[in-house]
Length: 275
Image (cartoon, rainbow, N blue to C red; front, side, top):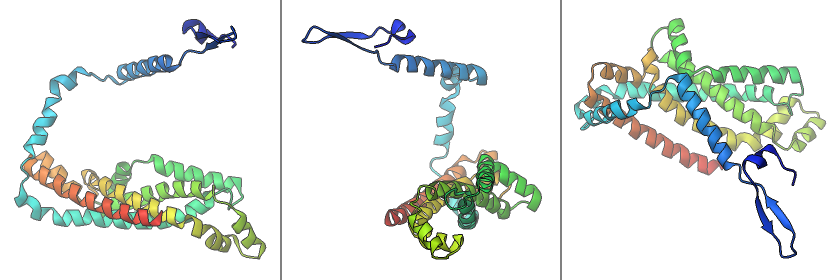
């Protein structure tokens, strides 16, 4: 075994075999990895100015606020249904249209279907740029363009869904066996027709599953879009928090948790059927 600098610091373990020969087993690199992780964490704390002592001095206030939400104000529930419906509506509409837009984006990004590196690179870069834009920032931009309301939230969710589903789908398409696609092309079909008959049946279950998963997440994201005026239950949540009306906030969160739980269970059921 060739000795390295690491072996000089962390001495290898020597074993003597029955035939009298000795072998050396290099020391585990776990201690070095742990040291590097702790150094990175310490450097991060120093760079960001994190004061861990605040967790011990002010952390108890978190539980004070949480306990103030219980029992929830059940009389406030009548004010929740309309904005909750708006939240679900813009999540569903944004997810659906975004998933549809993801299909051509994924097709144009797939290097094994569209054999044009410049075109592939452009659309892959385009999807990457869309994914780097936070949904909250997109909603804020759209509120300036189209005014306050659910339209801004729907467009923000639409863009996120298109970039998210498009990214996962073009990666899946690039791993598909292209034998059937090439056979359809050799029969005279166009790329779009070959894609329809050869690739779509293979990727459709994954596409539907990913789209459902995106919808699950979008319901949660949509709940905070009201903070920038993009409509939905986030408006009510922001208003009640501003008034320190914690029992009403607790009611909003309770209803939201129940709705998200139901959506997740239904989505999980359909995703299991698709797999």
